[in-house]
Image (cartoon, rainbow, N blue to C red; front, side):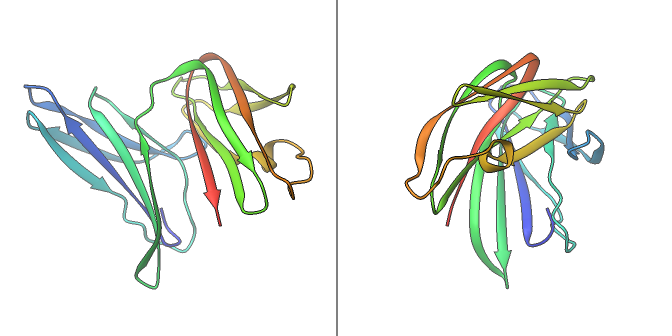
Length: 180
């Protein structure tokens, strides 16, 4: 949020019972910066949005206290015009992930990793057979483009490959791609 960015979290209750809980916006260091309670009637949905104010951009992750379906939609506006918008589904935690990545003159791939545990974790990223370790703080997250994680070959021809991600404890991972 901020710097022209806003995030909406859409919560969906597909069950036949009322579901209540809290939604937490968490900064990369694992600190809760906003908590919003919610109550969803059976077979209903609710949208919770960040204020999106301020000059600087704040990043982080979202945590739900009760099992509902969810999607985050983040948007960038410039002079009142939506320039870009993307959605990220709710992601289950796991210990092994594979992500399709490609880079080239106009394409950058990246990943976002959230650590839902109460302890820091070292995550191994393997690209082209070369492992790299990223430390993710307790309840924190990190988001990096591939060229910020590893030294890449000449991108004039571009490439497409798989990235391996492993962790000793469950984490959540999403692949990101920017095309200009």
